[in-house]
Length: 218
Ligand code: DX5
Ligand code: ZN
Image (cartoon, rainbow, N blue to C red; front, side, top):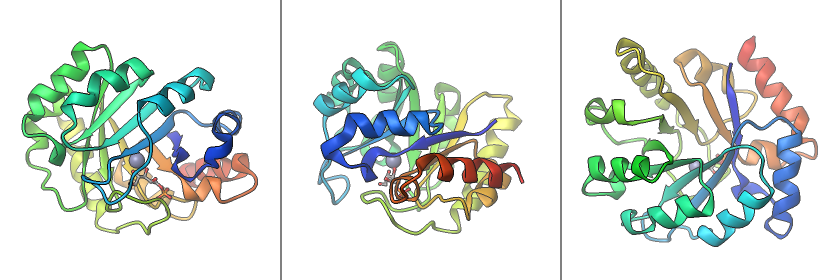
């Protein structure tokens, strides 16, 4: 069973609560929240206060994607705000092992995101500490970018690493996912699919999510 994680980055922020409820009704499994600092990535979005506001209306787990550096100092704030899964970037911390353990100790699920050009080799050491690996299929910073095709090989490699060790780590792909290309990412081995613009740019969120599931299963 695949999971769909709509990214509220492309939602109407003036009606954020309604948008969250709407994608949940449309079949979302997670609510993906993109936190950007204008330093690690060239865009600024939201902080813990807004995550907290989303947590008050959401019934699905909040999949909080931190694109901030340094990330360590803000982890407790995002856990308190209501994150269920807290994802940090490997490139955003000098002490990745410590950072991942802190998230776990605070009672949150642990995610690790890797930018398109980041080598996968370091993942091997920390894979068993994770609940989720996030393969970035765009350079993080903005919604609405095109899927980078070589991300598919990276998904395949990580899927093999997870299966070879018999781990139950989720494998999420983030960036440029839409009904037309989800099947390739499913075949490569991803099981959680972030989609921002593909969902929120259409009037019927449910129709997009249904199309994603149908194409994924085809
Ligand atoms: C990119 C973000 C993504 C993005 C997805 O920095 O991490 O979650 O918002 O948006 P789409 O689906 O429009 O590429
Ligand atoms: Zn994201």
